Length: 509
Image (cartoon, rainbow, N blue to C red; front, top):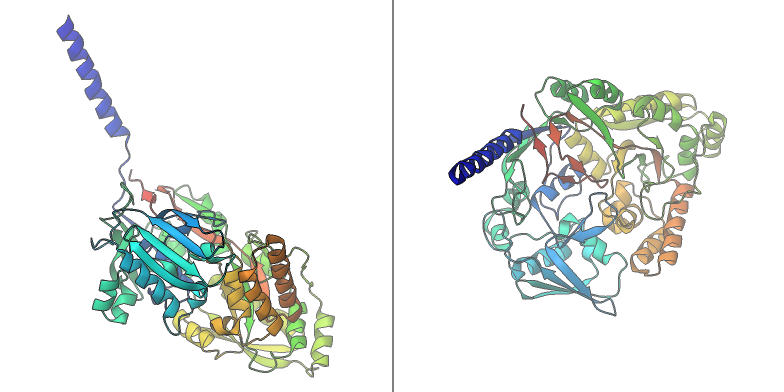
């Protein structure tokens, strides 16, 4: 009897294991993501484009990272940290046993070198993020000590920036900068396996990733499909698993497809017009204000965003810290626009060249709408459409009169965006050539001010200055439009744009 009971229990265990195995879903080895443009430079110190930045979380990690909702920071490669009473010394206690994706152990020397390179690289767009750093030391491979020149309200938040990730010193010194910018080595969940410029970038699982069992998918492949409609069709045909930058007018149709799901992921994205202040007539605030009154932003929201966005009233995102809700859209007023143009010396309007990045449905539609709206106030707009690389070169080189572009925050603190918008040394005020000494001083004060109430007043005033002078014309806020197969789970994109794919899987039928 006892033998029969034992056999019965064994059979039950075997059956249970078999049923569990059947219940587990098989996952795909590779997930294919369609994107509108390729990355250019993956050295986190020498670039500043979103198509580069959003890839970094896959490969590189720092002491801390932003939470998935983008509102705070949490530990990453630092388990914990202590801050001295005077706010001048930060001591980080590092995770033990962390390795780079080539199997090399991360050392204190790598950390020190990474921070000094981030601070001292000449011409780096991001040196301002760590400008407060006075000294960095590693008493051992598990401790990093950062000393700052003076207390900074944004210092800890800035440590979540991709430019302050740990990188391998020996590898950097063994390759050319061109090689490094194509294949940086970090401690993140993935590493770059192959990059065919203009076609695809293939990431493979980091075999030395410090969190066991992750990432769940072996390979992530980003394929470049510049045309929005083509990317959508490829998703419907099953050629790709995920489509980013989905045309908003296609979202409902895609979401109605029983095999797909389309979502507007919350973002910090602001779309705006950039004026080149070094070229007439955009050095005149009356002209810029006239174009604001001559722009019907609600028409854009209705016919471009299809309910997925709203009118923008500031350079800052509404989801950000210290947003100024007192600022309102001035409204659409053709007569006011004409009167302001006459006051500025352009009673009959003027002719202008408008650069548009090709393949982006939102920008292409916005440009056409602006051309039609501004014709009513005497502005003749000549649209010049360029592929993304040429457009970026002209924008960064300030070889333009007008263009459409956007901004996404990289930290949960407003100081980073304000450094770009208001401090000329950062990037020529987002490649506009605008100058305002009061605003530049306030932006610098905002980094130092430790009192929250005083910080809020600084950022409220900065938004007011921007609203009054209108160095750029905010148009609308919109989410990140993404569509994917219903077999996909774990797709995370933070409001800051960063991809978090440790849990990303595609279940096979």
